Amino acid sequence: MRLPWGDEIAIDLGTANTHIGLEARRMLEHDVEGVHIVCPVRNGVIADFDAAVTMLRHFLQQALGRRPLLSPMVITSHPDEATQVERRALIDAIRAAGGGHVLSLQRALAAAIGGGIQVSSDSSQMVIDLGAGITNAGVVAMGLTTAGLTVRWGGDYLSEVVRRAIRQTQNIRVNPATAEQIKVRVGTLLTNGNDTSIHIEGVNDSGESAISADLDLSEVPSLLSHGLNRIVAEVIWLLDELPPRQQSEIAARGALLTGGGAMLEGVDSYFAEKLGIPVSLATDPPSCTILGLESVLNDPQGVSLQGRRFRTSNG
Image (cartoon, rainbow, N blue to C red; front, side, top):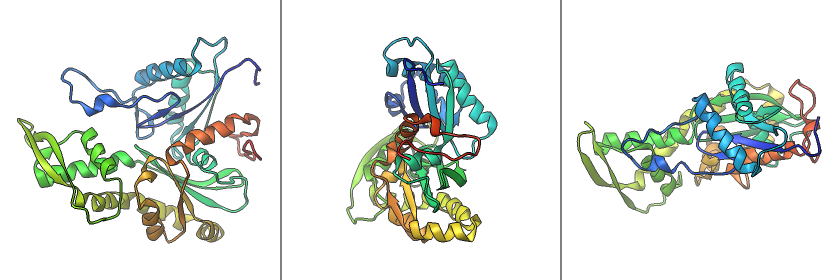
């Protein structure tokens, strides 16, 4: 039951960012002695329950701006292949943080709605959500996710590929935040011929002394492309497992890329070439999931988690 004075909140609980009131993970950019970094969410699921509750309670208070009379209804999303235990941990964490009734949707479905896909259509379309900790790929039709998978690699994995390459070629260990900054600075899978470089600082391979060097960035696009190969292989497997009718529909309508990883220049062309289907970018890739949840929040009576027809707020 929706009460006229009740609060309603949508939460996109991601690995890198939580879209509700946004605080960057700035402490990861600094190696501060004596400071222990806790990541409440890893690979798209709750990794530290108590830390997740503390974080969510803070965000809920920020979003509401006051102590609510009643616990707010919350709609959130979970990885498409999350286990029952992982889904229960997410719901329990939100409730422990002050949430009331919780609805959780598959992330690919939420991203598809937020990306503008008409999920009520009878014709199948694919959405590929490139998150930080995970990648969700799903086929949506008739208001449901008819097929989906969760790949435990995402933007953080691409950063780790860069980090490992620096260690192997330069004998320098850099922290994950530095590798992330390099990936974001390059920001492309395309080789543009610009021989730019960046000064990096870290420790030697033994970890005993500080060391620095100038890193040639011209090799980074190929590293990122190589890292994406593991994700592409899983999506190809999903496509191959679909019935012939769905395969032909997706071949015609294509796939939509969402998530922060979709911000890499050339990623749509890369997926299109590897998958052999049309691939397009969402207008606002990082915000698609929260926008989809917001759309559902406007029409919660149209939501069903028991296999009945799913309707968005605009029908």
